[in-house]
Image (cartoon, one colour):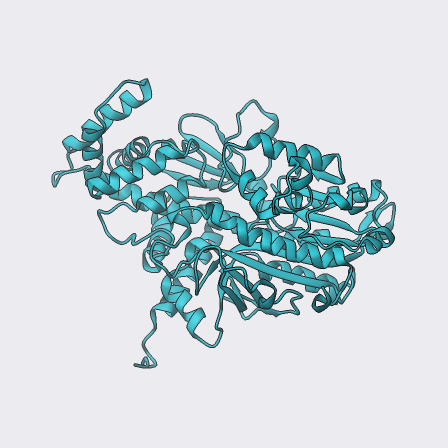
Length: 568
């Protein structure tokens, strides 16, 4: 049934909620501080409750604490943040040279510093997307904290026996004393508003991650600080330093990062050699080149990669890295704050006969043209524009402007798929920027046919570059899939990369106007399927096959020296 002119669909309401949320976050950022349960914070909470992001679960239930969503955010926030009343977002301001021990969340790498018992500093060097991402996670955390507080109180606002027993459990846990886990799970289930079975499973998942405190500890501190604010006006507060507000949006870190790379290329004498840029994880290209020779095994690269991905095989991974560094790979560790490691491969220093048979190299092309492959780790949201825009600018030295000879740019990433499952492949034909009229069609030198016949579903079509993966719900995603957009997936960087590439090629003319572009993504989740979001768990070994399938297709086109992919 069609809507009347005065009616709005859930997708329209959701998009309006996202816009209000981003306007609120930008306003608070400019203002410099806010209280999460103050008037401004409540406006953000209201927008998130209306939006109901799929990644957090059904957060509108006033009693039920969303455990998958809670684990998801705590894997991306610094350990111990649940104990802090004051959270300050900072730029890189010298704390890396202090005696404060940095805390780095593994699922969202950033330096964080516990200043004292009540205050946490979190370093923001990856642009606005990173700030919006963490503010959304913090807002969700405060929503769940309020549920825990309410569940811990009776009708007269007195603390229930379950809460007092939780205090004792947390004390014993901290002092290393034994306690009856079955009884502890029972108390905890009441405070979380979940069944005993759900609570036991959540405890197992939290305990499995050493970078996250136990669910007992987190529940206690979230509820404690929430209670202190409600009863004693000990307000929690989020603030932003003046240095962060001053630097954001000015490519401060991206410029330093790009200059370090071009300076390295210049010192190596490689500025006149053709450069192929790949945005991917920092292991797939290295393993494709060197794993077989380093480990002395003739297995297929995918099988070797699967073995290297096993948690206990750190020694094997180090062996491949050591071999790579002595056979043509150079690694530039990030010192700028972008958290983007760069690897540079010189195929002329690689013994081509040791390469796996899956790699199709044109020895004549490599010898004559001497290509250089520059692999940059994944950027995050708007950071993709900042880093690519700065990288594609000419290197400036003593009044000279020396351009990079960029022959191709290949982007491999993880994305949410809208029809299919984890591990399937998406080949975009355009990037559509959510919430704007911006869209970026392009000539992709990869096609869906390149990935057929490998047991994976392959989709080809437009992809949506979203403002944040944690702000999507089913209504918006169904709209993008079923409307005339016919989107195949969502990710956070594609439009930002393409915006920078088009500016460099078409407007600034700093790189070849006909630069070869390759985009391909593998599905990390399907947010339209219940239990298929990122919060339900990582892709794990299921990601090996699509990762290396995409990597090999990209490398074969690069190393063949043929600009027409049909001839590879």
